[in-house]
Amino acid sequence: RKLAEKVAALQTLGGRFCESWCVDIMQDGAGSELGELAIDLLIHTAGPFQGQSYAVARHCIEAGVNYCDLADCRAFVAGIATLDARAREAGVSVLSGCSSVPTLSAAIIDQHRQRFLRIDSIEHGISSAAKMPGLSTVRGVLANAGRPIRQLRNGKVHDVYGWMDLSLRRMPGMGTRLVANVDVPDLDVFAARYAAQNLSFKAGSALKAGGIATWLLALAIRYGLVRDPARWAERLYRWGAHFEQWGDRKSAMYLDVDGVDLDGQPLHMRAQLTALNDKGPEIPGSAAVALSSKMAGGYRPPAGRSGLRRRNHRGRVPGGD
Image (cartoon, rainbow, N blue to C red; front, side, top):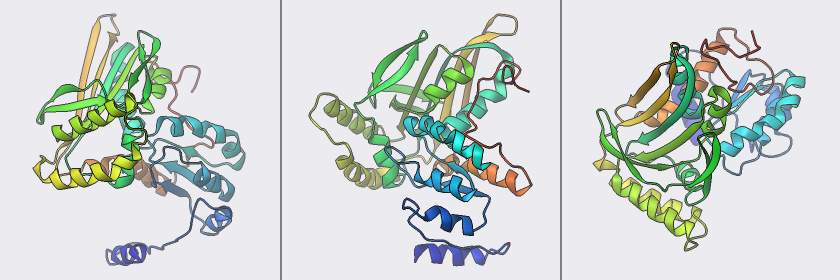
């Protein structure tokens, strides 16, 4: 019913006719139904992606439909590579992680990549506004609370723990925000793409009380007092929704990139992308929107799992064209 109402609302805006299709995409046989729609691209937005199968991507391959998703789950984005051969054979593209991380974060670094001869360290993160995301997002956020996260320090893998190492980050135009360790695909992608020796990622929200509550939950999980964080997701969601009115409606992604310039001198880049008026939750869809617009103009992404490959200081893939 909600889908039909949304489609009806879109029709009033003019433009091309919109159609709706309601199906359990995870079930067998969905691929043949999908193929009958004769579409070019499916955008998978139904998270959380933690623990989710690749059924949607497999159905797209079967139907000959290009696929992208908004996953920010490290394991899910890495595992999509298992579908590469099948996607190439079918002549369709399979793109995972078309979200704020790792796609937008990589785009910001790529914009300045030519200034660096070598990138040594990337510390980045996201601080969201107080407005609560959907419950599925909250469940995904809590999935790694108190659990080990692999990061790079001086080129060696070491473990930190999710939503721990709580720290204050000063962010221009936003004051100070509490941030803590979070697991994201960037920690794998950036190691390969930029050959950085130090990689870390943190996240948090505008409400410091929420950051402290999540940190306390992570501590409880870390020391075995709480075993299933998913049971707390709905409770934290309700608390957050109650207090979101006290937020400033500002979100931001920050990136601190250190390395050497083309003359061999130390180079430090500090970047911040800020979203105002509670527009932060709309940012993760920007890469998929850009891809859709480009495809509407005739572009076709290369077949297979097109990853974020390593780039040199000229922005090129070594050994590529």
